[in-house]
Length: 220
Image 1 (cartoon, rainbow, N blue to C red):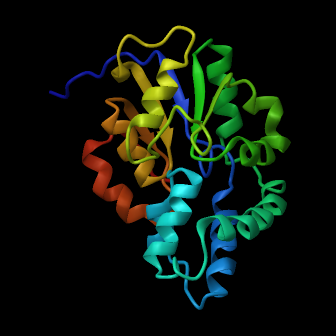
Image 2 (image 1 turned 60 degrees about the vertical axis):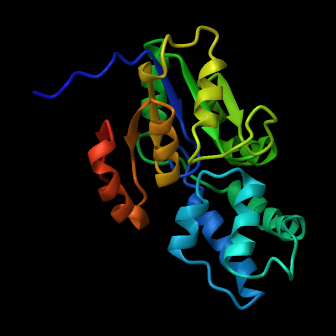
């Protein structure tokens, strides 16, 4: 017999690659940046960066590809953000995202967004989608939120987001997280929350490895 799960009372959404299709923008910008240093931005690198705080991810990347002695995270980020800003404004919502958010809103389900982005980048990405994105009243920007010291896969971001509900759940197990990234799934599970994974096609193998510990795995 399969054990029943605690009732879901609150929902937390990731944003990039889950609600809005921003992930290709990150890939293209990093590919262009690393090409300047004769390095390649691989799927493996992308997977390990996803979900981290912005500057934390860049610092990790520069060390991982061996160019930390040639460019600082701050220098890399200036040009990187300029590329992203133009791309973000053109990003479309992902299939079913708006419909799901509107459904939860119509039922009065408490919702929040927990993203690794900083507040400025989030505003650019959400600009075209404010009509429905703002139905989610709580937005937590891990990239520049001083209350969150560690990004995903650590549980800090989701636990902090949970605290910011006007009426927080009685236990993390009553929260359902929607994620697309392996690091995000690990963070949700580490926080003791239930999780739906809507995986990027690039990370199908990671999704398979997480299958047995996920509450509701989804394959697209």
